[in-house]
Length: 432
Image (cartoon, one colour):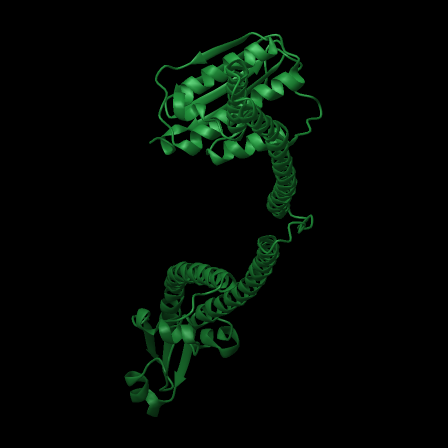
């Protein structure tokens, strides 16, 4: 199978085909017009030939060679007496159209050329014939000039098209190399500023894409480092909680159990120690529940997404002392475990940010279903976004959770003041 033509080959073929088409059309029009013009000229020459034939018998001097040498479209043959028969058989004496390739091609179109024969007193036979040879030579010269002009124009246009295509291919080569470098991890690759506006816009788009990828890579590195640091803090917090709370509670329970064995003969003391053991075990259970709740929102499995959101909003309102109005659809779509956890963590982080940074006096939380989108919205009347905005770990983790849900975290200024956070989740992708 033949290899496909390159862009340069296709452009050259297109330009050549266009020029050949235009050349053929021009040649056809020129030949048609030339034939009409030649016939008009021959009609006028025929009138002159008839006049000369009528006057030649009476006044042969009228056809003196010096007088008839420059006549156009007429050929005079002063035949000898013994050549009269040959003149009768071939009165034109060869090809009356001349010797050009054009004359040979048009030979069939001028076969009806008139020939006038006059018998002179000295025995010679004068043949006067109409010939388009002069006109055909002029047309042939015009055709050659036209062909030369077309060849020059074709070469110039072909060279210009090759130059333009090569410049375009050089741009595409630069872009391809830049994209390959970016795909290979060299996100600092940039294209230069080209002189052409189109090339400059295209290079600008490639540079903007590389800049966005580089920024995303930087953000991902920062987020990864922050998540690792957060993971270490969580592990430290878990270890401290196990050591300080549960460890001390278990140590106290062990001491009370030893004391219980030592005073087994004193019923009142045994009852008091047993009650303290019950209280201690209740305290350990509460600490354990708090620890588990921090690690994973178990309330999601027990109450579902809507109930967990309602409970968390009520607890947050009680802890912070800030009025929090909840707008919650009664019939929420049933999401998978991962999606429920992401939505709940988004709400937790949003309310945590409000408590830490907003200084709000009123908060509104909404979890509503709008067609194919489940919207989580948290708005407050606090101080709003700082300028310039510097995203911390919390906001970055919220963006990453929203991205995992196939959504985008949107931050808007609330009226008249404050901040409105929105996440539109395509819930059908997560429905169970």
